Length: 222
Image (tube, rainbow, N blue to C red):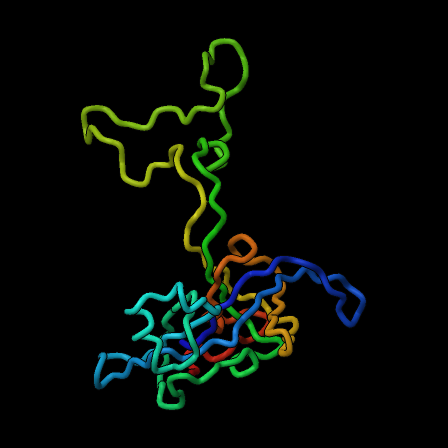
């Protein structure tokens, strides 16, 4: 499924035609450049590798220079691959702009890396209720309680909710509505929040699910 690479700028709000306030996330989306084409005859599948974000020449090593030479657009900070039903319509070095794939009212899926929260306990990480702060509870106010079993199976089950690293995970938010497209600045304004911190890299694709109150774009469209 074709898509674009973007960078989360931050959140703001705009006014709709009826005067209501709409919270939006601003995403800078390119333009993205086709760096490589994957074709069924050679690679076994159809896909495009896109480049986003300029990179200084002295920071591009020789293997990267050779890989990006055909595009003749310099170096890129981010390379990502997108599957497509047919890549014959695209050429290496071609720029894919925001308005080529999306329009106002479309629904999209945005994938990014969530904010890292560090090592956290079970109350913050999993919303455990904790224990009552009364006599007889010893020090179990914010503990997770028992995690194991008796002699059988005699181990802690995989996936047990425990304290640990929270966040810094790949997250996809689905069915976000495109509110505005500002082609001059390559800005995409979507209703709601997207994962990650400002300046974080996100991937934008047409929505794969259909809303009850409206249909999304065809997920098989190139």
